[in-house]
Image 1 (cartoon, rainbow, N blue to C red):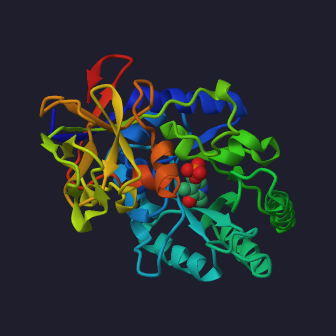
Image 2 (cartoon, rainbow, N blue to C red):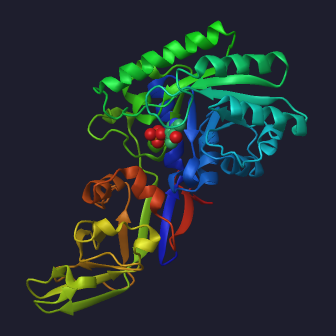
Amino acid sequence: MSRAELVVDVAAIRHNIRRLGEFTATPVMAVVKADGYGHGMLPAARAAREAGVPWLGVATVDEALALRDDGDAGRVLCWLTVPGDDLMPPVARGIDITAYTVDELDRIAEATQRAGRKARVQLKIDTGLSRGGSTLASWPDLVARARAGEETGTWTVTGIWSHFSSSEVPDDPANATQEKLFREALDLADEAGLRPEVRHLANSAAAILRPSARFDLVRCGIAAYGLDPAPGLTPPELDLRPAMTARADLALVKHVDAGAAVSYNGRWVAPEATTLGLVPVGYADGILRSAGNRGEVLVAGRRRPIRGSVCMDQVVVDLSGDEPTPGDPVIVLGPGTSGEPTAQDWAEATGTISYEIVTRLGGRFARRVVDSESDREI
Ligand SMILES: *Cc1c(COP(=O)(O)O)cnc(C)c1O
């Protein structure tokens, strides 16, 4: 065991993905971008395939190529290219590339020449997130060019998709508006002669909360890792299980007197004598600095508040007179089944979302991948 480690249980990832497939009755694309939301892209991708997903989703071409390098031969979609990306390798390796513009289609066409192979292209329509994707105004030109490329044998248009802005707020009228625009974009594509294999719109929250948005495929990221995309709204029978536990060895225990000012700038002053514990992870390891005086960790069976500022390499917690032994385990976050805080608890303490909590953990945390179903260590 390392002094500080992220323990990732791939059995939990498999379980979550199977449950998402059963619950939505729709094929699942497991989204493994951003190093599998901090869980490790390759172990997450392998677990997802074991759970039977037909698709993996990533942001960048490099992420998609890393999946191929790992031996993954299944369907992989990427959706964030930049003009400098060489699109020949993803075309050559059968990766589905998302195009937002005619310009991107031209670059894909050029890459097919060098790859000596037909490309697989998906088109993204911007239905209201105003991030990536074609506007509705540009859509007719994009689908016309995409259809022309099919006719010349340059590519197959394998998918059409979009992305919600507010799916974790099911009552937000933006959801219905986006879904309606998505259907309009699908109709226009159909009129232009496109017959994509998959139409997809839903991320985790929409997959769970908005059946009308499931179409042919649901793109699940956060829920695959067992974190709740819509806290308070997700049906408990979905039974999501957080896959990550972050732990560290307690570095030091000591007594301080009343009036001791703790950590930089003395942002917490002991009102009475207490014991303090030193936890050897800090903001360089992804512990948000905003958790100063707010976050909690589990030591010796109890939640212990962080006192003062989070430092680069360490945080100080209040042991309230208890005296655990240096070297004892500190659970920073986990599934919550032993009383430890969850990523959601950290998110609420620091004013962010669980996505940011888990994707930021890294730095000097080692990663250990385990399989609780087979007691395998991977
Ligand atoms: C990250 C991402 C997802 C996954 O979203 P979750 O809310 O984590 O399920 C789906 N689609 C796109 C386009 C994304 O960028």
